[in-house]
Image (cartoon, rainbow, N blue to C red; front, side):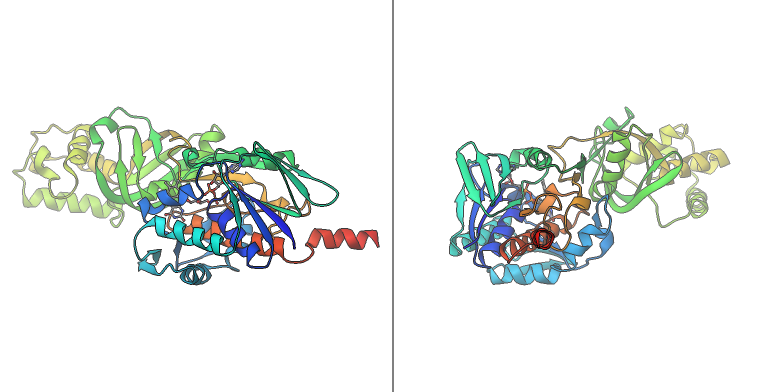
Length: 419
Ligand SMILES: Cc1cc2nc3c(=O)[nH]c(=O)nc-3n(C[C@H](O)[C@H](O)[C@H](O)COP(=O)(O)OP(=O)(O)OC[C@H]3O[C@@H](n4cnc5c(N)ncnc54)[C@H](O)[C@@H]3O)c2cc1C
């Protein structure tokens, strides 16, 4: 019976263990925290958005762009849904975003745990993997609880995001020791810190709009949804979606700024005409009253002041320059990005094990036969909306099946070479 060690018991490691074990392998799952699957409990605000019915290659990112989709197309949302259904998790669909029907992330973790138990996967918690040593036959995994031998190893130790859940980045060191290159690991799906004292007065505002990330007059990414203003900068789903690009610009020490548009359905000209008509219809309103009913009061007050309009000025006396300045703030609020929040606050990381060194069909290392990767340790990050867990399940499943099944491609190549 093939012996497989899975290093890291998160979403991808547990799936890999289940997939390998259901192929008949003897599986040992090693986890350095006191419990398995901690991160799953914090996903989707405790409800676990475990996949999304809308799947396209653009939902996944990597420096090796075609790689993630090769994995996800073989184990897509439908496979994820039926995998969990077999485990007893009935799903709830919210506009394509899938959650367990109980709305409890713990249900997903419990289902995985019960399946691991049913398959008799051995689990060792509080066991930190320090080194994976390939030998002539198989591997020795060195841990702080002793050494373990296996025919194959699946490295599923996660990234650096939310390290309190166990993903402390030590997986990257294990991969590096085995000769793998690590694409710079940076926070993603994270809040952006911005320059400007005015943010303190805007904290707490939530407003629909679009956010785009720019550098040197080039728009790099754009998204739309509810923008949240905080005392240090910007947050909310659309900000998370573009944050990976800002993170990279900051890392490369390039200029990075965001442009917020709080009326994205209007062109600049339409906005200008709209404000003029509004002023004409109630010319007696003061500037302080003019935007009430249109935007959050904190934003309106800030824009009026920033546009250089006195709060007492009557709307009927606004000049062309007043309208132009207001439009610019509403549709083109430019804020300089000084950084991202830390790994502690990031939902995922961009970067990781260079996927050019991994076989996309099996997830086996191209350098170390018998070593496989799964999950966020790889240089793959998905959009917010169930895509990162989808990649974790899909890559875990592929790595687990491949490791458990027959001779690996690279072993095959070596065998031919020896003939
Ligand atoms: C707050 C939050 C909310 C999120 N919400 C969602 C969501 O709703 N939908 C979605 O798709 N994605 C979400 N994500 C992202 C998603 O949770 C991750 O992408 C996914 O869990 C990654 O799975 P993984 O198995 O690769 O890594 P992890 O889940 O991080 O698992 C890695 C495991 O390896 C263990 N480990 C690490 N190093 C070692 C070592 N040296 N020895 C032994 N064990 C080790 C860790 O303790 C950990 O248990 C969220 C993330 C966060 C932080």
